[in-house]
Length: 278
Ligand code: 2HA
Ligand code: ZN
Image (cartoon, rainbow, N blue to C red; front, top):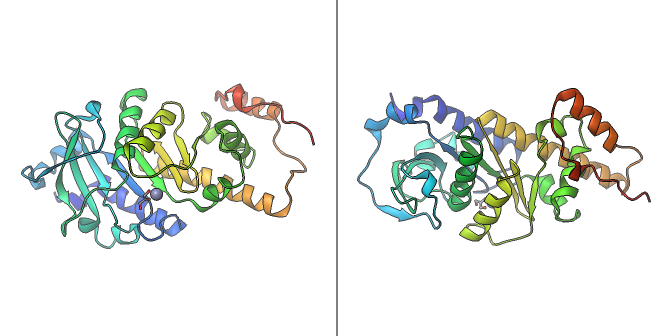
């Protein structure tokens, strides 16, 4: 069976197209990676090229040794993934040391995996460890409203989480652990990757100030749904703040506690602080 006929490849391509149509992937913005299951690799192994050059990842991910990933290409446009997947995507294999990768399929006209490969792989390493291997998807998008909020809210995990939770009743149920926020940093390297991975030990979502968001999850649809929910909440908040700087009414801490009980989710009290009344 051809690589392109595989369900995981089709789901990956669909997610790229969906993200593009949301407006989150201008030019070559954003990237996506998927940790491929052994049984998924088994059916396409005859189409993988094991003789290519090895390149340094730029960081170390020993717990991902010998794992295969489907990733978007560096400088490639999400718009084009659906039109020409073989030139815009790659299957890479991590070597025995966790320091290098080899391109085994895709990027037919040349190229490298996503410039955010260190962040993707370090997030995968953290999530593989803390979800017993369940999480397989890491997604980075340039979500307009979340980016806008990083200019006006304090860059603080508690404030971002609480403000976004208040924007829609489903938010604390969809991301009960909250979201993490990083101040502006140079993208693409090991430093921002390490800081993001640190946040991913606690959260499924990390915001990069003045840049975008990372979301992680078990499936393509749950990861996309998470990104979509957070961005939708941010859009509501931007609309509210565009009309007036204070809220006339909102969801209160006691109401979040009721929600937690009814929906059997744990909402950490750190996000349910009393706000100073103006
Ligand atoms: O251009 O989004 O963060 C791809 C990116 C870099
Ligand atoms: Zn980016």
